Length: 363
Image (cartoon, rainbow, N blue to C red; front, side, top):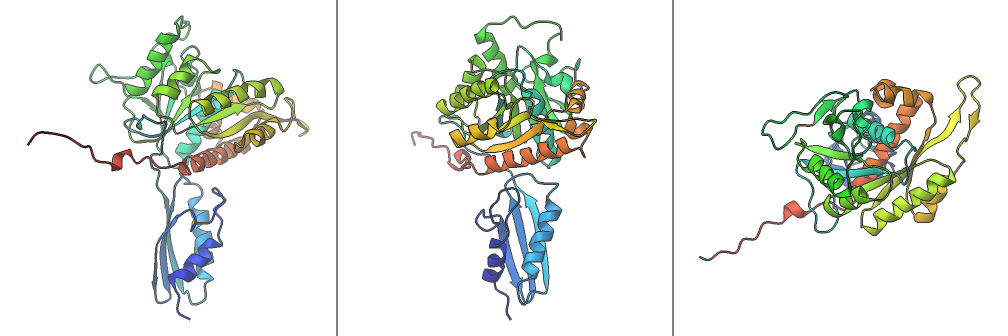
């Protein structure tokens, strides 16, 4: 029986990508399908980083195509390509950065910074080029969490700064430029100006995702981000307790009002597992995050456990994803990061670079 491209496509339509929950044909991931006698070759181009998933996806694709009657051999090349996606109206993507993702919470104390750091590291482990901006001017914690306390960025031209690099991340924080014990006694305008400078005067290098660790609340910094920073989407971090969810709803509604799409919600400290007896307890309540997602038609990206090790490793400057890469928590962080990247990939692409500049001149 002669093998056809249509038969190969039909086989691929029956395969579901575990990360997108869609088939490879409908997502246009299957490309360059070629049939030469009984030999089939094709490319699978994912729109999200999936370094740890590529071998498994390749094996699944090869097995499915090899089962097509008449196929003798299959050569499948699996990779990924990350592109810039649409941002707020009247704003263009930042130079050197394809996508900006804000990680926010309605209130403090829900583990937002720890989540932001580990998600950034997880995206980097999946093969993306990742930047991390600490936008919490009053309480910068990223330098401590990444083991960079006491380091300062360098500037070759006196006006722009090179991000500090560690664990495969490019990172910038006001904490690199102030004494750790010095309080930031600044009013709102100074804070927003500092945020703009940190963002625009850092030499970000070909960043696929810039994760912005936002301060808690819905104040000046959040409004500046919404009005002046080209954001692809936001992630809300909360805990299951009612008080945290009330504030998380406020944060979600704020982003909705200013035209920044919510990519999903992460429930932190969702469950505690006793290290001695293994008993599971929902200390802060149960199911609140998922219920909120249903109420607002937002995706529930995942739930993280309440573990002493997560806090200890962040305090020690070696967050879970790099400090304990084989742990259950690290695996959850990577799963959430992949799903976050899928949500970004599903956004409309930025087409501003496709249009030529129109110049009117006298001839």
